[in-house]
Image (cartoon, rainbow, N blue to C red; front, top):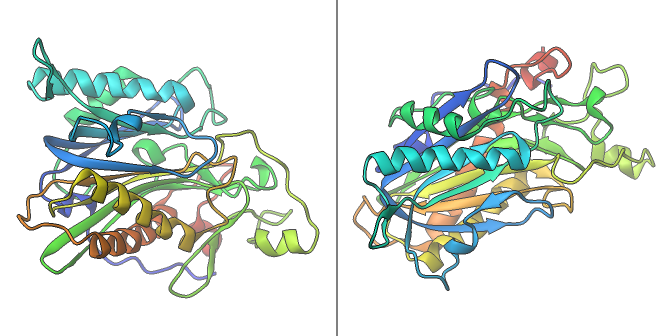
Length: 331
């Protein structure tokens, strides 16, 4: 397995109207990442994993009233990590940003979490202060990738137990076409039942390792040979992320874009959306490009950008003592 050459590319912050900030814990491998849309963004969501941990997803249904949200938080810490959204709300309230509810402006903050509690002290997890600090760090410049923010404690290839797993991470990418830009940011903590592949070459990139830990096993082929996996607890295998565009979208169109974007996960993670996964994708539309979206074009670009972001998450990750990165195993 040769290391894929990563060229300088786009990021979700190429979408006008968005900022990204990380909080990375110094106490154990965990953290959170916030995508801020301080001027508001029309949003949709698609949850396909069977064991999700999310906040405000029902609010984003096209059937419901609120049109825009102001931030999405991706966090480690399992369900405890949903508390990061409280810190993001505090930050936005201080800036008088939110839905006008009459007596107060209420920031609309969605969130999704991954389970990284198996690394170090599980009592250490991102909370409200972590979310607040991520907001203070947010910027329009391309965010750091790899083992940062919500990707700090991400691991992959847990099919045959943590002793044969590898390091996951966080990645971002963007594409432009037809006068619009579409970006993606993803945290890869996959996966219960598959491996990660480069859709351009078909090459196996990362996943469960052989017994000696030196090579990739190719888990799908191992299963077909009869080497059955160790079953995980629900929620230990999760890929969560955000796709965004500067085109104008309705809530219905944003929901369709989130749905189409999952194709990017299916191209890189095999299989995906299992009963043990918490896979969830949010779609944001800032409208800053000034033109109405073609949902087909936006959804296509979102899936392409997301697939690239998954690969970048894997190749930029920094290994831990028991979890080598793809780049380490590739040398």
